Amino acid sequence: MNLPCYPYEKTGEEATEVYSNFTFAPSQNMNFNEIVNKFEECCAPKCNETLREIHFVCACKNQMKAKSTISQS
Image (cartoon, rainbow, N blue to C red; front, side, top):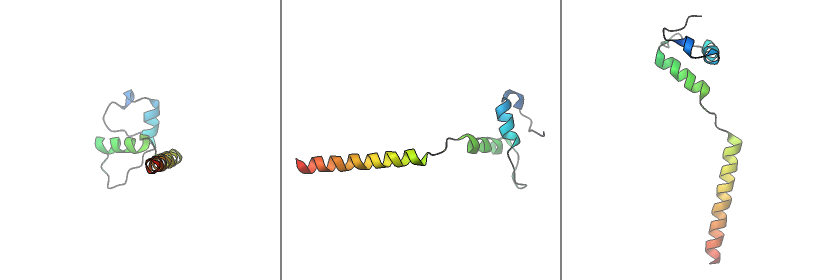
């Protein structure tokens, strides 16, 4: 395994396994910033579309409820 010269031994087995699955384009420099970007892409929380839709529907219902309450006053 040809890892860059930073103390990858301290990253843990999971991080080393994730790193070993990264692919770099020939035009990409394999520097620290590129590696950090790859980890961020891989480990950043993904958007839960279902949960997002539920929040949207609830917000719409609350807004409609507020409008109906105002119009009844």
